Image (tube, rainbow, N blue to C red; front, side, top):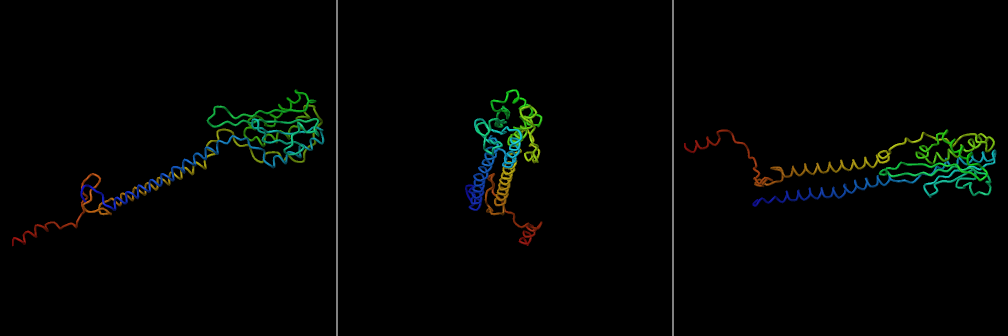
Length: 279
């Protein structure tokens, strides 16, 4: 080979190795980027979750029994800014008490939840209020609102699990109303289905907790890419090594020809040959 031209086999191997690396970059890098974007997008959902179906359906009978014994309608309202997430009362799930003609006297607990992004310096917040019909005094309604804290229904509880907190607060309204002297004692419900089935989720930074699946997938793809690159490098070294696919007079990367080792000669063999010629 003259002029340092690489053998055809070596050029073909180099092109295949380059094509393999390019294909890996085109497939794996966008995949990792897509997983990261999908993880960030899924974790940036700031919508306020509504109460579960069983939480709503179990709360309505409790409020209905309280209305039968006290003559006051009770309800709940969960909002996300101007959007109504959930509303219900003793009249049923989805029915508010404020404008119901069958509820001349009513009390409703409302909570407005605001979630902020991870990059925001502001904290998540909840604004809880207890409102009622015009015949109920503001001081009495304030006393009912303050009593929610005795049941652990503070701002943190509403931020952590707004669906459970709003339905739980609705079931405590009859008891707090009786304590404030606005009505007689409420009938004791046969069970408390609105109680939480499990402890509230822990508060705090849940960035990695919500994205661990995406992170593991991204790491797996990166490890797979590193494995393919390592295999390609090893294969290329093998094909360009002396005696493995390269010609005897092929030049190395430094410009020197690659020598091919021949069979070793015994010591003194050449000298012995010359001696016999002289004889």
